[in-house]
Length: 160
Image (cartoon, rainbow, N blue to C red):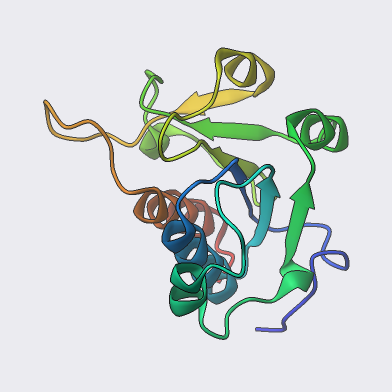
């Protein structure tokens, strides 16, 4: 597979993280995106510094800033995404990700580990989906959730 930079690739899966606050999860997501050919978009502020040793321990040599785009805030993110489909993965959704038809260039948005996304973000997205879980369980780890949904988007669109 040819490796392309964030700027040169017009299509392909995109994972967006809303104000991530656990460095190990973000580092793991960077590795997942790198290995599966997805762009990563981070909506700041982050709850940690990228110099954090917990972050560096997990990200290892997968940190390729050409494949990561930072947005100063959610307003900047949504302004740049006006013509793109944004899908929010949330425990508050009714529709399952397994019944949704992903497009190859969708942006899949995930909220903060500690608080998800505020209601205003729910109102700005095109679709809200959930990962089904057994009863009485609150949520999956963010990095695992990204891997699950990104893999389905890739499978549906035969991207790898």
